[in-house]
Length: 138
Image (tube, rainbow, N blue to C red; front, side, top):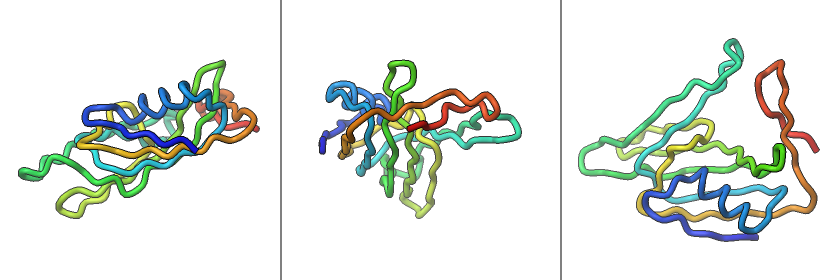
């Protein structure tokens, strides 16, 4: 098990990838808790075979952060590169719940805590042209 703290301003996706690279994770799962000042998520549109992107900022008075209710996913490799696949759910100050596929642009504020479980072997992602997605292979 690998534990890391993410500081204000860090991008969650980049930080998880950096930790996985540092510890040479070729297969694993992760969980993350904490808060964000901005969120960028995707929703897969099967008709267009691409992700629709939505961005959120709290904008609720003086409250700057959104609480991470859940952020989880897996670590795999694609053509020698670490691939982080995650989903995230957040709660805003006024009770709104937001979520989706974790994309770059989710910025930590004030902190987040990552727990990464390293597994044996290698998980691979291979491009599936029917869906235009890199699907998980064992």
